[in-house]
Structure formats: C-alpha cells, structure tokens
Length: 474
Image 1 (tube, rainbow, N blue to C red):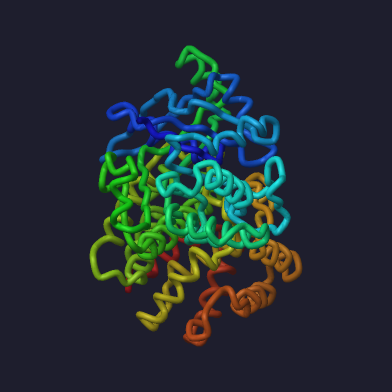
Image 2 (cartoon, helix red, strand yellow):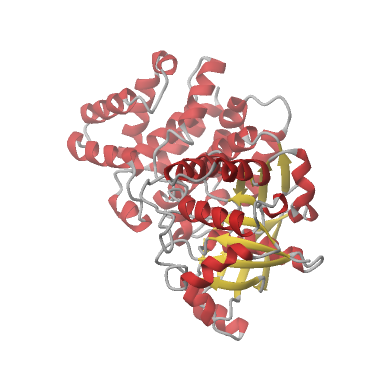
C-alpha cells in the first residue's frame, strides 16, 4: 500500500525540498503521495488547486564541477487543502489508514507554544495545536492502535525541531486535560524525529517568468527554483531507518544519525556564516551573482582564507568531514544563478552574528589564542552592512535585534574615528557577541575599529585587498 505524506507547509522551500525528493522517489519505487495542508490563513493552496496541484521545479547550479540545469513537473501532491476554508475535509484526514508520515515547514516561528489553542477550534491557529488535535482524534478513532502512530519529519530551521514539537504537544495535551493513556500512545507509538535540511531554494523567478514560460510552453505561477545539491540529516533510533522511504535515495545525501549536533554545527558554522558573508560582499561590491564574487581574485582569496584558515580549523572535528563539507559549499557558491535578487534567501534569519559568526571567532580565540583577522573583518562587515538602509529595505529583514541596534548606533556615532571606536566598544559590550575570554585578548577592539574605519572610508573592495595583502606576508 502506498504511503500518504501529510505535509504542513506550502512555501518555496518545502516544495523544492521534501516534495522534490518524494517526486524523485516516485520515479523508481512509487512510495506514495502528499496531502498538502496550508499552515496559515494566507498560502499557496488556491494557486496549487488552480494548477491541478502541479508545478515546475527548476534545478540550477553546479554539480561535479559542471553547470547543471534540470526541469521537472512535481506531480506527487494528490490534494492541497486550506483548513481555514475546508475544515471538514481537513479534519477527516485523521481517519486515513495509510497515513504514516507528517512533514512540516511552518517557518522559524511555526513550532511555538501559544497557550491560545482549544481542542474545539476549527482549526487550531498554531501548528502544534493542529497536531495535538489531529493525534487525539486519530487515537480515538483507531482505539489506541499502536500501528496507527505517525512519524514526524519537521523541516523547520530550528534546533531540535522534532523534540520541541513533541514537548509542545505534551504541554498542549496537559492544558486540554487529555488522558494519560493518550499521552502514553503518543510517546510510545509516534516518532518526533529532529532533522536538518540543506538546500538553497531561490523560489519564484520573477525576472525570468516570461522567458521560462515561453521556453516551457505553458504558464506556471508556482515555478520553484533551487540548487541541485541537497542534504537531509535525520536523527532517530536505528530501527526507524527502515521505515523511512528516503533511504532509497543517496546515502551521502540522506544521513541517519543518533546525534544531529555535529551536522548542525557544520551547517551553521560553514554554510550559514559563509553564505551571509558572500552575499554581503556581493551586494556591497556590486556583483551580480555568487559566481562573480568567486571569479574576483581578491574576493575569492578572502573567502577561501576565511573558510579554510579560520572557520574550518575552529570547528575542531577530528575527521575530515568539516573540510569535505567546506569544499562542497565552495562549489555551490560558484552557482551563477544565485543572483542579487535572490540574496535575501541568505538573510532570512536576520543579521544577528550570534548564531553563525561569533561561535567561530570565540572558538578560534580559545584554540589559537590569537586574532582571526578574516573573521573579525567579517564582523566589521556585518556591523557596517547594517547601516546600509537601501539593502536592508530591499532584503526585507525584519525584527532583528542586532540589525536595529547597529542601525541606531550608526546614526548616533557618525563616521568619525571617535564615533567608530565608540561603535566597536558598544558592539563588544553586548553579551551576545564575544565571550569574556575572547574580549580580553589583546587587540580585538583595535582590530575591529581599524577594519570598520577602513571599510567606511575606503570601501569594501580596497579594505579586503588590504587584509589579503597583509596576511599574504605573514
């Protein structure tokens, strides 16, 4: 019997990632179909229904050192439902016999506890509220049958997403006074697996729509563009691996583990740090795409030194996994299709360096006891970029504390050397930035100030050239 994948999410990423992989599996072993649920009041379900739940996935990038393009029709979605308009149809899904998997991408703020949901809501507002009600009704309908539990594969870009979802389901169940027997069934017969996803998804190609539709010979309002590279790391017990059909795909791309931490660390410290840095460099230097950055001798040299001299060594892994992943990321950044209009993808989590830049600075200083020149320059670049209102506005970065702090400070201190020194002091004083041991290392404040002054007075390209030239002599 073919499996049903219940999917909470209709945005670009999950359609290019999970649906793309299910579509690929169906070419060979016909694993099943997707019932897509619109997780919020606004969404893409009506557009999908208008296109008979079909859309085009366009893969573009570099694969094995060569430019790669592939176009395919994603046809694995059997239904797309808006639960706010079609509640009865949605609510009946808990009866589905061959439902086994729940995939989700409800955004970074999707897996949260609100305390506002009720069991009788039609539907519940929050995603965990919807899941709790769904599981409770499924439990009652199948009279607690152990083989009717579900496997959850959340794709939300948050740490321990599966564990967090399970914790909130239990919290909501307690709020609603649901039985201990139900909680036991949830705990023993359902798997909330934490996962880590990795694929650059650029979304709808607005500037190329007319050309693409003429080339394809049909109209598609849901074209999704992504790179060919993907990796999905799934954390769970060993015996669950055989249940998940994605193990039929490449073992190098679908990884099962009992600990996501090293993989999450690699992605955050290498991909996230470097992608934001390269995007900032590209915008400030007027480059059209990522490949233009990598084709520039000075910019490429800075990026490579930042990656291989400072970020990778600071991770401290004993095997060569960090180096291999870094080389893969560098190849992905030679993608000419990652254009300026798509740079906002890399700023979706804001400009706060705490998550993706500061850990490498701190780790380098703890391990080496000296100053990571390229990383501190990247921090200076991060601070400076936050003052460029034209980019911030175009990238639609919102609700970022570090961005707001830097923007406000820049307006206050101005561009004088004294003002920039004050700016450096204020940033280093933030608890989120450097740990106490790092701040005490001689020269941090001076180096950050000098680099900020150089960027402000001489521009990014000349300042980068100065760093590259200086370090080449050492």
